[in-house]
Amino acid sequence: MRNLRVKTIVVSATMGFALVVAGMPGTAEADVCGTVGSGAGCVNSRDVRNNSLTGADVRNNTLTAADVADNSLTGADVADSSLTAADLNDEAGADFASSDQTVALTITDQTVRAVTITAPTPGLVIVSASGSFLFQDNNVDSGQCSITTGAALDTTHLISAEEASATPDAMLSVPFGATRGFVVAAGSTTFNLVCNEPSGTVSVLDSSLTAIFVPTAY
Image 1: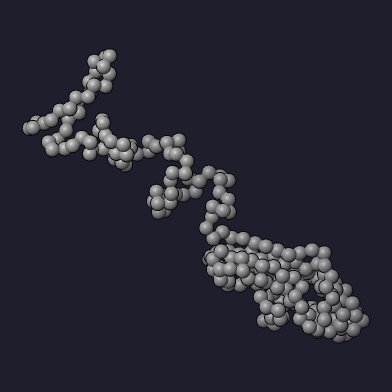
Image 2: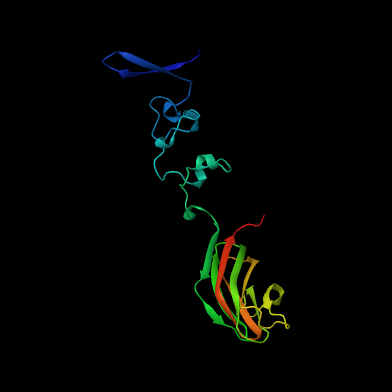
């Protein structure tokens, strides 16, 4: 070869073995990664064979998101049970309120149960309510409730029960349940079970209110 420069590096003086490295004219060995005698920090992706590195070759906490190509990870790359809610972005969440309860209703709207969800991003909250109306009057009893973010009964999402006028003392306890979805902004939103008593003597027993946040609608 023309003008070939040869550099000999003795690897083992005791065995007399020598490694010969050939360099092209005008090339400084110190600037070429992957050659014997390369400077510190001179290894790049061309010096590493595909699939030759494992987790044991990477020091803990040295990789960041910038080191991972978009869409390159799948479920197979994540060990079972290794992720917690803190590792997830905009994870779903829930809260609830329930207990032994007797709330005497009046004709005025009142909040029987309330639960607050703090959403990490805009999304949706699905709210479920349950309980029982207790009818206690010899005349016609009626009770009504709604799931709402306000303090007033929302008649567009009404839960109601009423005795028939011909048999005003026929019912004692009437169970109820309802579900309503809300679109929410990031931050805290309080959801209420608001009830009243249009007639008779009515109480709400053992109500429960559950709210679940999800970031995406499908």
